[in-house]
Length: 353
Length: 168
Ligand code: FES
Image (cartoon, rainbow over all chains, first blue to last red; front, side, top):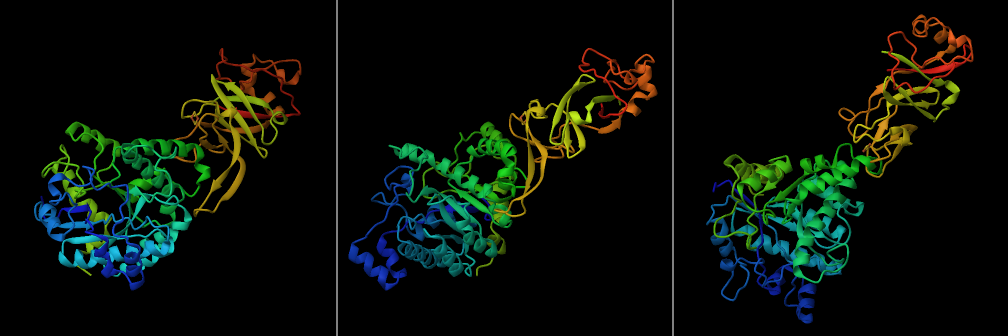
């Protein structure tokens, strides 16, 4: 692997709630201690599910890796990764209280900064956004001066569709700082994860995420976010990829008939995706063989959409098979280096803040 | 190009349309506020008859949430999948360069001019049908047009009336 390779989706584990206490003000620290809140887990990633942490990356008690040393050993040094982007999955968006949600997000972001970014020059991170728009803007403004924060992250299933104008102050701030919005798989559990109601099984919920991504993407496009904020980029994390061409075909097909409903779109929806949206490659939702990969790339119609990600420590591949079979060298270089650089202005800057 | 009489002007009021067959083609003629425009009655998508589509205006926007409505009645929406076509040009709105329906020149001519058209006279074997109300001249009005099995309409031409003519 080239030293320039950029891993766009790494998930640092939080050892315990207490790890965040140093990064909270006294009110929240005391409050969480008094209430006995020692852990906060989102059902999106059940800790013991095999896919949540690869078996050989778990600690002695089966725990998720949660130290910089494990990340270095398992990913950065092992694969000679040039840059890795940390996307903390601590469920800061779960609390209904905007204030608590914002307190969690601030604590996670400061913990990331102090215990991960400061420890390894190869690391960058997402600004974890809380479950509230004003507070999200405030968090972006607080952290944007530190250029190691290269994007801001939310979930694909939140309270309201991501394209709605309520969200636009967030996109204004992101555009101004030239920071992409990352949308990660997962829900903050305000709505059933399927549009027909709550599913019974994890299997259903896991696959329902692609519908969440489709709805989010359709919302961003049709509401005109990319018309209003032409610089904004969106990165889909753990979205899968193969649903995109058929989804876009349908969106474009229907748009031709109801264009007048969204007259601010002056070109087919697929073109906004080509210009503004990127997707990480793990988990990949097709068989990893050369012929299938070639067909997928053909359907995507562009070699600029995909970003390399190991999705550490989630289990999507064995050993060191970090990239799917059947991608030629030129395409690998695009996915692992050129495309991430084109996506993240702050990675192009190279130097630290 | 052969000229075909579509009908008397007052047969197609403003906002109205008329479907005719000329030179083997189905053609729909629209009246937009006194101006006439003719389109092939076949949607370039999957062939539906545009003559059955609703008329609409043009909705544009330069910013999300802002709607600019203009040109009421100057677009036709295909009845099958709702693609919008500009009646003046035949161009689709979503992809004007590549997706368009064939447009034919249409204009108004006085009956007198049509009746005295020497070519038409030739086509009608020298008989000046227009001067006799009872006659039924062909809608083909020039000498090179071949009167074939597709010719659907015949009618009288009155010198004092005005007619919509389409060139096919
Ligand atoms: S046939 Fe006209 S839009 Fe499909």
